[in-house]
Length: 122
Image 1 (spheres, helix red, strand yellow):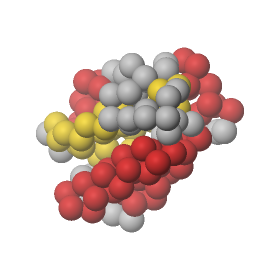
Image 2 (image 1 turned 90 degrees about the vertical axis):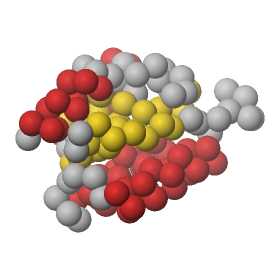
Image 3 (image 1 turned 30 degrees about the vertical axis):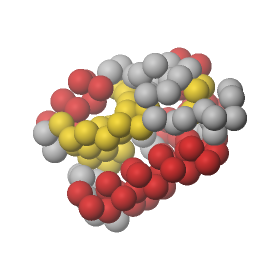
Image 4 (image 1 turned 90 degrees about the horizontal axis):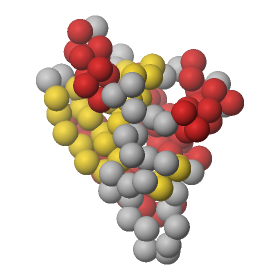
């Protein structure tokens, strides 16, 4: 975890869902998470997607600031009845959701394709 750690986020739209994919194995640099958060919030503000899939494929570690980002996105989408779902999270990171009881407010899918299919079907 170097000082220059870059949190890379890619935002795409697949059918009616926005897909926010973290492209970094370790998502822990507070400033970088804040920058990613700003990028995601601006996208949501501009596009107002009904569904957001947050894809954690390849992510091995994240700080609690990421949970804050997920809750912020969820709150923003709730204002217009949208939903945030999570895909491809590794079992160790899923435990964080269980421990904090956040597994009760997010739906989880094994991969991005399943998540996109589910939110577009609903």
